[in-house]
Image (cartoon, rainbow, N blue to C red; front, side):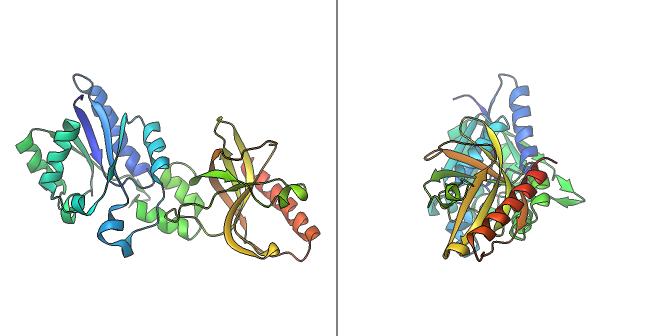
Length: 298
């Protein structure tokens, strides 16, 4: 096991503040004599789901989404640590010892406000004392701010919940997205000349923006990207109250059943609504298609 530069935390969203931490980890790993391994340790489930379930937030990134985002920022080893009641009871000293023992930690990179160990007692001051005792270096990364406000996962969740996709994308450094498997639907879209793909019901932990019709971009497993429009929510015209994610991809003709698709919300076009007839529905979908294309072509 090569000695490592380590960072740890929930990293929900892998937003621009997190990205600054990841950049410092990779910079230090590459600059060190012997070229240290870059390691990110994160948790599954979210720690609050164990220590205070009522306060556990909806997630911006599920584990596989997080893994890919972290890898895209150059981190070599992604560790998904099971967060159990036993882990929740580890104090900061025991947690640091575990990082040293399991990952040969030589340097620890922390966000400015990070705390870990029981009661989040492992703040910067305590970790710096532990570093002197256990012979590892500590680097603290300053907040990334937007108009003076530190970017945080909590801020982005609040923004997404009220439907502000533009602000969320600015703070994430990318449009907000979801990964889902394509499943069979009722086939109604094809019958009216607007074929769609249906994503499996999302993990209940995943945060979704408000229901509505959206302009979206979708990336297929083979790397191709298509614009489209998505109905997120019920289908009242057909008397279906369950939330669905149903997407019409522009300029695509094919079978995606069983494949995994990454979808990004770009702009909300309108509310979900019921239509009195098939013709009224088709007319509105054509208007949605034009609006979505105009948005995506900007």
